[in-house]
Length: 194
Image (cartoon, rainbow, N blue to C red; front, side):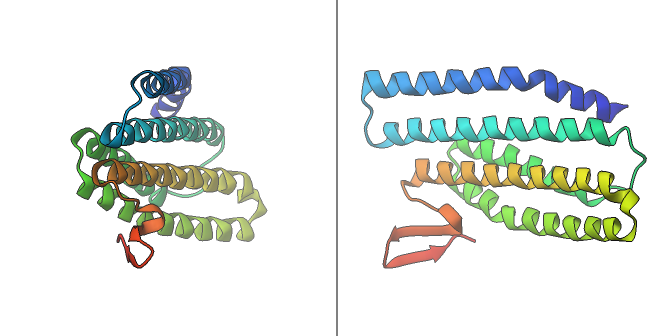
């Protein structure tokens, strides 16, 4: 099936993603050691290190989703999938937009991506509750429901990593931190990002 083909392609690309992560780390560390960057250059290099790490972790989560997909293909479907594809689309859009924010230095887009994380979290909670109901109704549903819950959790974590990249982009451009949906200038001046 097309799902199986896509899952196998993800598994085949894992090593390439890991190698790119190692290359980014090496390049950043060489720049730190040889050029001793300051101010904006230092923020760029430290942000690139963070972003590379987040992208590699997203790759690991994509592998987990692919492996789970290959297991679920062997089982009859539990229900029509509506919310998980919706959640996947939201997470993909977050990743695409946050990479664009990094490339273009768009701190407004980076902030907006961070704010979308709550929508993905709510959808994940909804999926979990619905699948829990299926498991309680019939123990024969447990394997399929757990597989779908894991996929939902992995998608939610991908969105979290996109949010972390958004925070790194905001820091890179503005020189300010917006972790945990909080923008801080100093301890007396704190406001919510979203």
